[in-house]
Image (cartoon, rainbow, N blue to C red; front, side, top):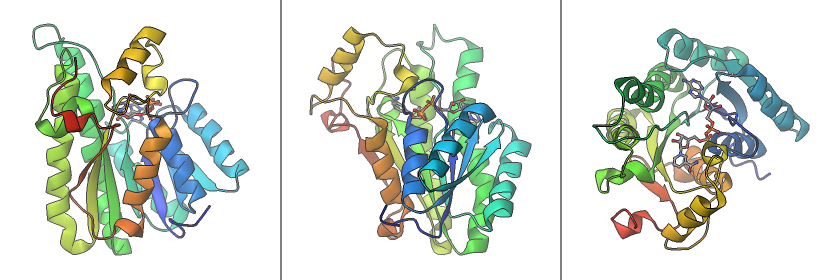
Length: 262
Ligand SMILES: NC(=O)c1ccc[n+]([C@@H]2O[C@H](COP(=O)([O-])OP(=O)(O)OC[C@H]3O[C@@H](n4cnc5c(N)ncnc54)[C@H](O)[C@@H]3O)[C@@H](O)[C@H]2O)c1
């Protein structure tokens, strides 16, 4: 631990992985705590978040669990209030919740479309909406969005995943708007473009699909949730105090191709 986040209070949404292994939210929450932040673990499943809280405490860190659906305004508002009530301030919001669903516009159901937009965009908007006033009270903050190569900068499409690509590209506009609106209040907004990392979210992929994903990447190596978490620590810390409105690909070079690899 080098205390890069000492004294800060961080919220990580979707912190607990949905299965075995280390998810992006989990790795980020663990690294935030290892760097000295007190971390609010937000998840729909209190049980899985509690398991992560125990792990953080066992490592000597500090964390609290808030269980709730961040697509609901009252839950998101209560979450921000809980963070301040528990730890006295709120400095970092890591908007990690996100899900995908397959389908072209012809194939995707309206129910899936709405579910994907809600999980990726509405949760991010609501958590940001209710954390912003708390950050202002504390004199500033850092908000991190979690996008995907599927929506990369609105410059490449994602075959067969129109809802996910649309939602993730939407996060880029959201990031820039928040960065522009809150810069004078010392609140920064940045976005990580997550590449093909191996996490519980993609545990359903077989060995062959996993190998294909790896070979799509210019660096020919598979990413992990820790690669994402290291980037999040930088964006959360004061080391990036002059960085806002940035889309940071952590993807082994995939966005550099400017096309969906075949
Ligand atoms: N794994 C990849 O290859 C990959 C690639 C690109 C982007 N991403 C992005 O990374 C993020 C997720 O990473 P992860 O590994 O932590 O995922 P994860 O699925 O392991 O964890 C996400 C957690 O969020 C919770 N959650 C879902 N909806 C919620 C809601 N409305 N309110 C509160 N909690 C909710 C889920 O229950 C789950 O426990 C997503 O935004 C995803 O789109 C992942």
